[in-house]
Image (cartoon, rainbow, N blue to C red):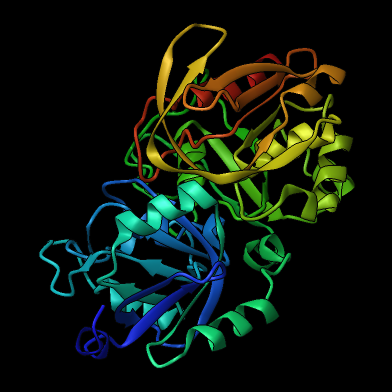
Length: 386
């Protein structure tokens, strides 16, 4: 790249193995050190931006055009987005959608999310696939490679991601009722009916970085959801007399939340339990299994998963860096129910006796396909039987 071309850029991305990518800044313009990952979704950048599971991460969008439909007030997955940075090929700052109220850059600036556009995202994504996720710095174009590498060597990725994004106190979201179209405590019910027996189910949901569409999905199935902080003791959850316990998605290494693992370990066997994503890993750890970090993770809306119990193939939405060690399940009462057809990783487990199950992917799929919504019905059925 010649000097004239470099001078036309204002921002730079430096990876810890010494690669440099030049581009244009948008959103927040402060330096950011974060773990760099990629997402293959073709739409849904607002839901991705506001997914708490991306805390402390810089996300490369493989779809080339981002920002063209703006930001809609009803589409956030968290009240306060916590992504570190967004990396795109082409950024559009003039959205053309009737639901749009703000531009992507405006929202990113408000929440301190750095952006860089104009780089070769195909090359960067291939690099992540070949060499794995790693630390990266988004900085001023004048920062030298040596300076950037020094900054990266001094900054690690924090281990407090779950505690940062989990709510501080409990909040109740009421079940949907026929004809009710939602309020501040009932999320977008759209007049849907109760569950299979028109019964209201009391669900205690452990918030490890919970997406809002999970709450909406449970509300629509007739669940009154009490969302509690990640470190809520088992005794406090028992005092709520729930019909079932839900463990949410969230960011980071599941072994960073031993408090949540202890709580789940105490509750399994006493209530039906359903876990999603990080919740899947936490449930597995509570039974004595092990987890490990994937080379570059699974992030996107097109991951094929096989349901071993039925033989059906689901196209799923995923966002995670860690997976459950299949071999470690042999010493637990858990059985594998779903596998990833791309790399044979564990995508679902269950303990039939304890009425506990979990999946690594996102059945609420925001954004993504709707193949896996039946899992919420499965949770309802277990609560009906209990």
